[in-house]
Amino acid sequence: MQQQSASEHLGKGLQYYLGDVVHLLQQNLSKKVYLVRSDSMQADIDGIGAALLGEAAGALNTTVAHMKDDYPRRTDTQLSDRGRLLLKRELHREYWILDVLEQVAVNGRSRGR
Image 1: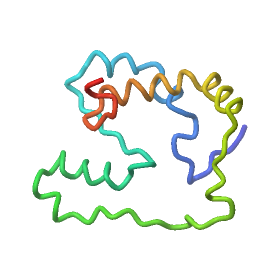
Image 2: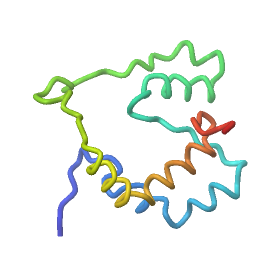
Image 3: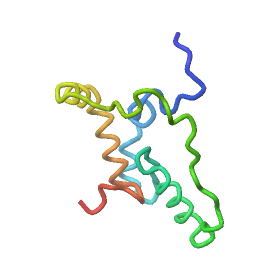
Image 4: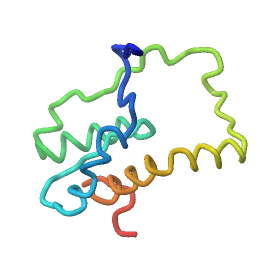
C-alpha cells in the first residue's frame, strides 16, 4: 500500500472525491460552491472573504505567502500536442467534473456561457 504524503492535496483527483456526488451539485443549486484555483489563488481567496463577510473582509489579511517557489525548471511547462491529447483523453472525467464545478460555483468561469 502506498503511503500518502502529508503535503498532498487532492492526491486522488476530483473523480475520487466527487465522482459519486457531482450530480447533487448540479441538482441542488442552493448550496454554494466557491473555487480556489492555483492560477488565480489570491483573487479567489480574497473573493471568499468578500462573499462571506462583505465589507468586513477588508480587515482580513488574506495575502498568500509564496514559499519554495524557486526551483530548477519551474518555467519548464512545455507539453507536446500529443501529450496534451493523451492527458485529456485519460483525464476526461476529471475535466468534466471541473467544468461542472465551474458552472455551479459562485465565482465560476463558466457562468453566463
